[in-house]
Length: 294
Image (cartoon, rainbow, N blue to C red; front, side, top):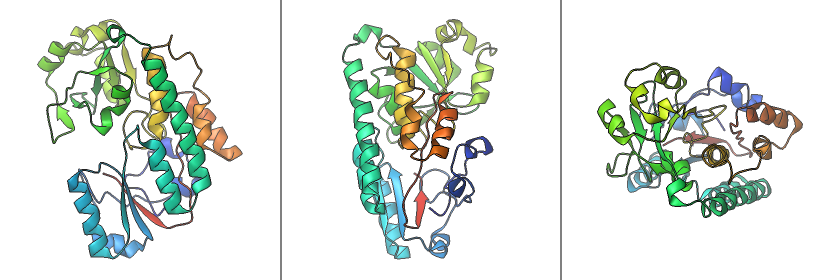
């Protein structure tokens, strides 16, 4: 790994092995806010350009362009949460770390199976409506069916953001629309939004705020809900399941992040992270790769 598409925050870096925490920010090559050009990719001389996320036609075309214009192999792998086991095994084969990848994939399968078994027992009437508040104001959200909504979707909750905005997956929301939706639960991605919601006169008109059902999504070192579309969301799935349906998710999940951390030092980091139910992720392998986010 040569660097980050978006550098981790100082707080997030403290959870990561030094060899990754100290890598520079390279920028994004695809998606919204791309900040790196192909000449810079060639200059970095990776063995592989690896992109995990959306496999929509636009991203397939971008991966083809990267490979054609740089003569560097480019691989695009689907980043769906339900497909995490397959994603992990595919990456493990590419990087020559199949044994570790198979172990992680096995954990992913078990976690997903646990969730499916629990959700099958929950009546539809007991499944809440959820608003995912993104950004410092909370006035944008992820639509149903998008990668950023998969944790909510797989838990059988109803994302009030709907799904009628294709091809957009993140949409702006007006205060009036929020009041009309009246979600049962609000998940705040941004700490600033979470802090402001309780005192904002518009937000205080929502039943979720009045009931105290506002939750800050764990984000160290990576978000438990959406970004990046990686195994960090497995822990988010268990965290949110326990939050929404404690009777159906009785297991203590604080030890779950350690499964991704094979060394004693990494297990220590995972223990720290688990205090906030947040996930730990690690990249292994000898290939020099450039990570490209969508």
